[in-house]
Length: 251
Image (cartoon, rainbow, N blue to C red):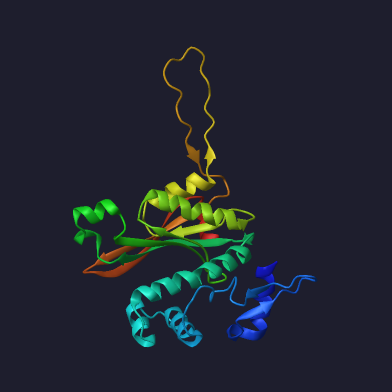
């Protein structure tokens, strides 16, 4: 209740108020006006913090943002984490039961401190630095990133991405498109697939086989195939992985 009240009063009075009185009858307590907001716990002047967050939102780097407001890059990282928590809470609340008809899945490359090939043996054991990938599920109809996952380029994170998308969507299975990364097909079957029905043969020895995941009849997935020559894309075609060609072309 205090978080809801502070959020309401924050939108009215802004970040200048230090403490506010409780609006519950009979309660004489006070609470910080920053409670439950992105300013909670920040011991800096509000203009500097706001400018830093706006600079990061516009695509500025951590070091560049630190030079703009004259603070260390580690402080910018801490501020970014603090600002991201309420943003994530709002996104989790609003992005729910989406009726998605088409979805594009992709993985964007980045790095933490240095590239994977330049890591030492100790840094590889820590698994904190190196290549970092942001897996996204993009809805082109609304230009919305419905789900995202940060991590390595492996099957586990691909499965997590599709699980998060499935949790916030409703209705029929969307039409999926992606590049030729093989992780997507396995992740789609892992989340949306139907277990194979295995017939039991009396008297047959041996271990029971694990049922495979089969695509549903209304499941359509296509990959964009890019042919390169001399480092440039010279041809773009489509390869249908799941579904009929007529249904995919109709999309």
